[in-house]
Image 1: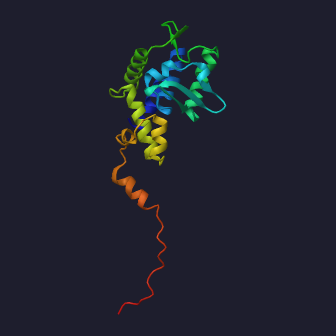
Image 2 (image 1 turned 60 degrees about the vertical axis):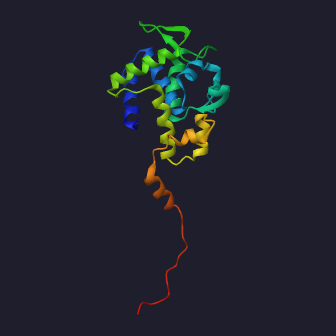
Image 3 (image 1 turned 90 degrees about the vertical axis):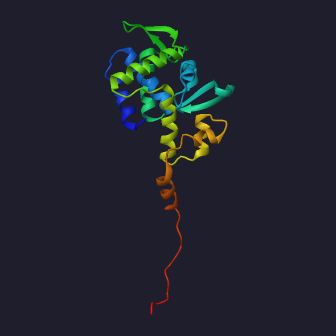
Length: 194
């Protein structure tokens, strides 16, 4: 996915002034910014989020390992908007929203996340995508922006770095940029040409 597509998805959520629009913006932001799988997103409770540090404790992630994700900048803002609306009661972070806009006191399902993203994708004019495409995009964007592969591997909770490498779309341009980081201390030749 391109950054313009993520922006379009966020605009689709923002244009919906109902509680569902606010929730969907926070959900979309965390799926992308924290690299969450949809099952991980719906398993989050309010207590999993440390507002001061922007940390999300993702319990029992793939491989039954806990990990940390982060809500920073726009994703933290979207989550703050949702928390103001839903309240800070110690319940699931993402709650269902009924058709009339009333927030239900029940956890969303991962299938509901799939349907929400389909709906927002259609509204945004984003070609068919899966929730996992947001995770792939996060990994690719971090690598494009210069994050080292080991850190990205940890953020993605990949057991093997080769899994992370499969998401690397940088190619020759990245290698050329990396080569330009080197400084060769050459002062030039003192020999004159004959």
